[in-house]
Image (cartoon, rainbow, N blue to C red; front, side, top):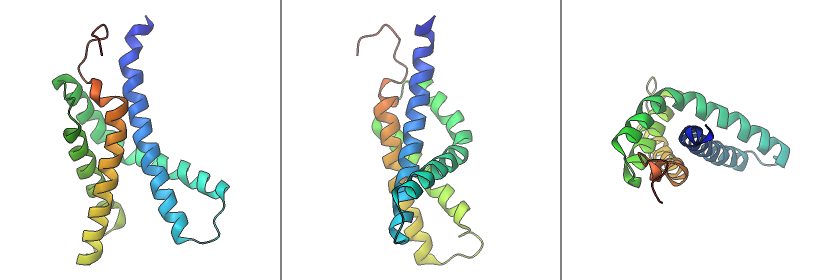
Length: 140
């Protein structure tokens, strides 16, 4: 019975790990811009930004992750491209750059968040994606 939960738990841990990584990096960047920030505030900001990352990415991930699992996508680049595109699109929409575009700021936001999305997707791939489509009794 517990063997049937192995794959969903692996996917959940991968998703959680990617979101925590995204939240932590965003919290560190925010703390760097605000001098005098202490560790408890950094932890609270990490938790808040992790929740935000989970909320923003849940719907696209509920579509893409099962497709990757079904197709047995075990290559890193697929996850990296997905993470970069999702993070870049979300950053543009959340920052409001669509309404008042400033080219240099928009490019900076998109590139920085694309790298961060690819890094978060790498965490997901490392935990869960490299085992996509593998049977439970198949050797590693």
